[in-house]
Length: 536
Image (cartoon, rainbow, N blue to C red; front, top):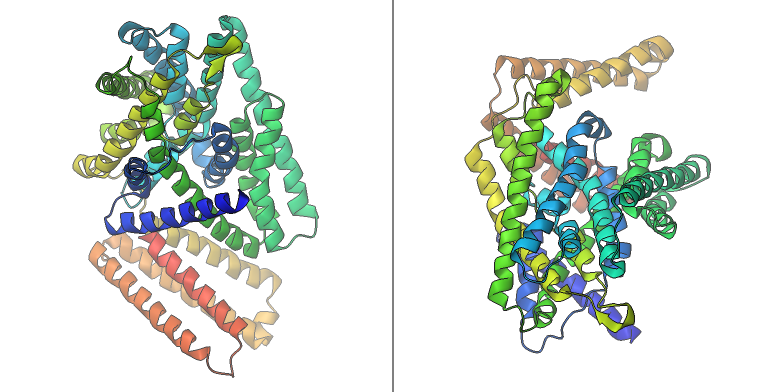
């Protein structure tokens, strides 16, 4: 049994990797392509139906995905837009749940208000991974990406709390609004405290125990699981624990991790998250045949698809109305908010609305609905809820995902006024760092800079780099550098790096040079190329 399961896992991982390569060749974002591929594979005759354990999805996939998102979220941007993020991640989730609940009761036979809130809690949180993958390479304002990232960090927690309360209401038949409100605050609040507490423990381990880059990397992989499991054990929000703890440790990464640890951790996490995301999205597609089989004759597929389309349109309209209304109301009453969002155009708002794609959290929540209630009573309309959830995921992820880059292109989002380009920001930062280094040499190492030949050369290199960066920044300010020149410059630099890398490969056969030295030089070239390609 273990042997068979291991082979199945290896085949799945290999299949995901190959499919992502095909998707890149076809220029289709890998979440969309994997869902479609999983859907087609699932309907191949002879393929056994796939049953996904939601506990595995929540426990195995969710903690690292949330932790990675929190780690790379800008705390500065998160705090600056905290009001808008809270309105989207909490307020919008509740409003969407209410709208879906009453829509379901009105238009779907057999739906109760509790079942409607259950469905609303399932489909209300957008999937940040899908939006980030689809928008990769698409030029959007930083404000838009910051709002989408911040929303995705918090909305999973609020939606799962709505889902759990609605599920308890269906099972027990009782609901008290006051108790639910108090429980929501306590579940989220204690989850944050647990995340910060465990984050503090791992901070101490990284900071004061003799770790290596390998140990640091392993610790970063273990951290989100401890946060999630401990929080869930005490019946609080594991999602909020992982998010809060991830934000805390990320803000202290320059203290607790060495440069080698940061480089290795980023490399390992990049591969791990890529595989987890790939498996998750192909599982979404593979799950459909089993969901369709359980739909039953009482709800024809065409009718169930209609329900899913209606709820998808409703969720999109609610997101549109909520975003535009709250933005204008808060800006009207608060001058600081109005100044903060002055670069937020209607083009940007449309992108935020359209980027509300659903994904793995919605599917896992739907699959976690029990088959039976107490005394062997079947859970009402479980299969229909599962099918509607998949329709919402498919429409928002595949259809919206495929057309989102086109929408961004057609909108032609204007650049924010008085905002430096990324290249200009990079140059100004380098100037500050070089100035700081020269001041440090002048005040603390003046003797060495006049008597140590190596230090003399270092000071000369810094001064030369300072002049070079100032000249480049001045050229940007005058408009002497256009996009075509910059692109040509980057292409030549990458070509030079390729020549150097090829020469290093030849030097490996030369006995005069150690492989360790050559590998370090290859790593240096990799970092240089990364700096060039990321600036594009």
